[in-house]
Amino acid sequence: MDVFVEQIVKKRMESKEKILAVGIALAAVVVSFVIFLLSRYLMAFTLVLVAGAIFGAYWLITNMNLEFEYAITNGDITVDKIIARRRRKRVVSTDAKEVESMGKYRVSDHVSKSYDQRMIAARDANDTDAWYITFHHRVHGHVLLVFSPDERTLEAIKPFLKRQVALDAFGRDAFNRH
Image 1 (tube, rainbow, N blue to C red):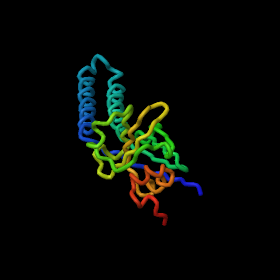
Image 2 (tube, one colour):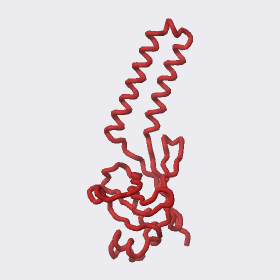
Image 3 (tube, one colour):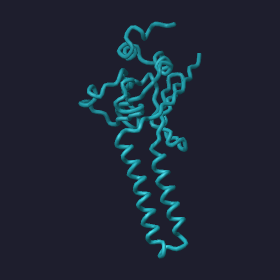
Image 4 (cartoon, rainbow, N blue to C red):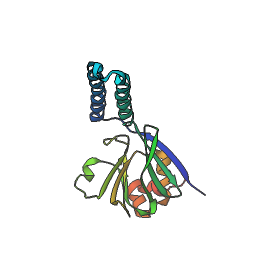
């Protein structure tokens, strides 16, 4: 039987991103004010420049709205980043059979470990419901992927994992079939 599960997770804005958004909005206001002060020199371009500053600020702030889409298709794990619901970018794709380890994510467990690439595709970096997988990728090397799967997504991944990885991640529940 084919397995296909999709899940979309909205990334929460962290405080530094909120501060950046406020900074961008303030910069747009300041730039607009300066343009109005210089309006006698800029004449016909004043409204165009102000509109450009406001649109630029809007575009930059909305680009900070991120969602992650997890797709599990017969053991293939694909993570895409959706930027402001306008663009989609592939974060990573791997086969569940290639997963070396999996479990609940705790930052302290991975601080001292060496990875070629750390990919955070979770609601936020400190999400208590976050999980991790590690695997070797042909382009990215040794990868740590942190994500926020729901039960359906975990159940879709579970049957395709190596037996020991599933046992380590889920305990004896890994082999209980409903």
